[in-house]
Length: 215
Image 1 (cartoon, rainbow, N blue to C red):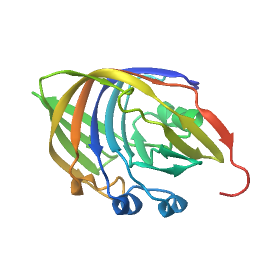
Image 2: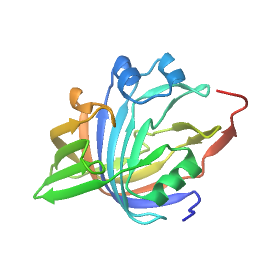
Image 3: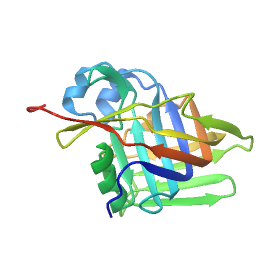
């Protein structure tokens, strides 16, 4: 299924916010070799998302944005590792925004307030337990905007998603990660974790440039 940008999405999800060390980003965050030579800093994010309404149907997603670096002449963020459980999401994410989505399985269960999430095809390579609090507050990307830079298939993509929703501070009760598949975030304490339910998100059309020569 082809689904061109823009996309308007709704759902629920967790945002874990970090200040990753530069060395952790270089060694653990699946960067292209040439990007390991640049300095990384700023806010990093791990997001676990349950999209309930999208142009390609419902799907689940796990991603890491390790921080910001000098990319394409500006200080921008990038999604360096991302998984979804939908072929249509994977193919359109790559085509529309250069987001390097990979396919895997998700199990997302809820027992009381706890969300118990396992990720991986066959045997899980990430397990996480999160418990949101009860006090709501507004969440809006106008407060913490994310400007993404992606390179894929000899193209450069720049896009700034926009979203808002209702947040709840969250307790991270347990994480287990196989670092062959995703950054070993159980080694790092998040600054804060937030559950957003519901949210509305827009991924607009990106700015696209063709890469000249071999980079």
